[in-house]
Length: 315
Image 1: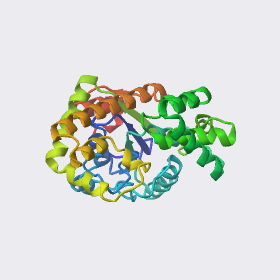
Image 2 (image 1 turned 30 degrees about the horizontal axis):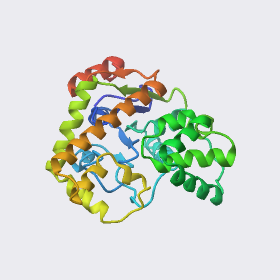
Image 3 (image 1 turned 45 degrees about the horizontal axis):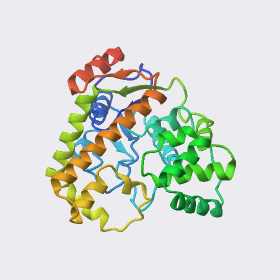
Image 4 (image 1 turned 90 degrees about the vertical axis):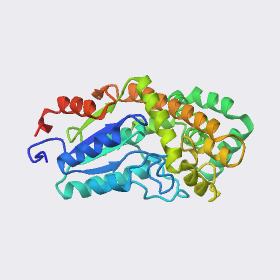
């Protein structure tokens, strides 16, 4: 184990697109430092879909303490603010134990909330929320997104296609406050003090990342991901719940309904995963431009790059 008593920071941030190897890197770092891992992935919060969301396995979780993984009921949709409050409390507890924390995930807004801040947004009146939802249903996504883009271009560009919940949320905040949601999100105070953390973003070659995405989805099918999807679908949750937007869920659910073959569902899920990885990478380039990059995808080469950036990690 590497000694950390004279090392700073006490908080390590590891961000990256899906399938980039960030979870393995986080576990290796936590093991080397005697640290604890904190989840910063909006899908891995939930108890359902361990395989589809690529949550750490029980064996991996046994190698180091893990926090905020699989702790939330899928019927209880968490916001960025709710995650931030929970993560801040966990980080305080880890600091009280005099152990380093490794925050890892692919949800860029979580990292932004930690390092830049998240302002408290005033409560939106019920009638404004209802009107925003009605507008979306009446206008359709394309026109609704265009209207949002005129007042909050950052949100319109950031929110993924088909994400009705976040599009409506962004519009309702503007409608209620006359201030774009993106401005609210940029006007908070950092949850972790500058100088207390060190960050790295994983950005492996696109072809290698896409190949990893495809292989991982195929392995998920072999490991029983259809049973997971079937179990979640059987709960009949509201389609706007965050976990119901997990990448690959829609495609595999269509197969379970008999609407497509397994091969076609897998190919469609692989394509969606590649698109998702591209969106994550694009977001990181824009919002984490000053974070050091790891460009390798092989685990050993990735670790060597990481240690080169942080020489104090050398035993």
